[in-house]
Length: 338
Image (cartoon, rainbow, N blue to C red; front, side, top):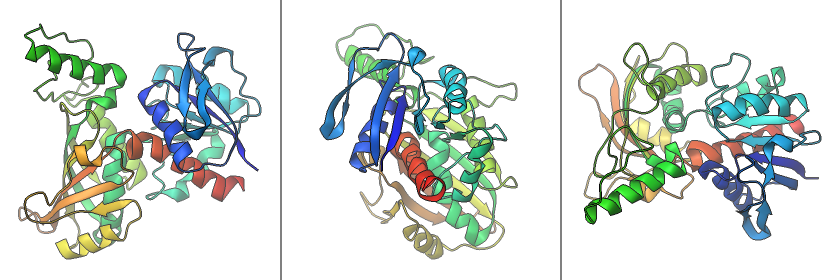
């Protein structure tokens, strides 16, 4: 039959990845429209074997008749246009942070809480979680089912693509400039990102945490279990694509390293590469372009009664954004629109 799809923010890094993912997965599409701001209207974006699609002006588009909108235009734009699309009868899968903590909007990772998807009918909007949250809860879910998680301590090492194309350009330009002794120009980041790490993602909050850290804490509770205590330190690193996380988990009852490895290997979408030797783990460079969430360095945490430490890596533009959104759309069609 096919579905009528619109992609908002189609010219951005995530929007382009959404188009790639739709094409690669053979999504059942009758018609597809790509939308962006007036500045991008009239330009072309690539879409699989179809070739190129011409970008239309979001401000002029009538969403009536559209089945599903995959939205990645930035929070302020989504706040205005996602409700308009929903009011016109479309179901919006939104990749921005704007709707995530709305109690009437389900926040979905298909491998973790598919049952919550039914709540989309309240507003016709479904939220895609933060990229760093997605890969973490993907891994935590089978462990929580086995041992009941009490507390999570996570430190992230997040690629610049999480801040968009301009941030990727800034890393490239700073890196090249340093080698030719050009002055460092900072526009996207508060400090030099080339050959550096920045413990600051999004704005600071009154309690000293950043908004990115807050997102991981509250989103994990909404998706997985409100009783889980989470504390996070989020760091931007000079990597183009791929978020890494050092995750320490404390349980109510024992989950052995061997049991954890077995559970994670059996979880759809997770690949365990955990060899205690040189190169026996996954890095962001190796995860870039891959759909899986990778887990390495599984080991017991001897500082608590029942604890594990893990290294978690994923492509933040794919499983951390575009792929998760497309998987939500696939699940929506399978369970609610068929």
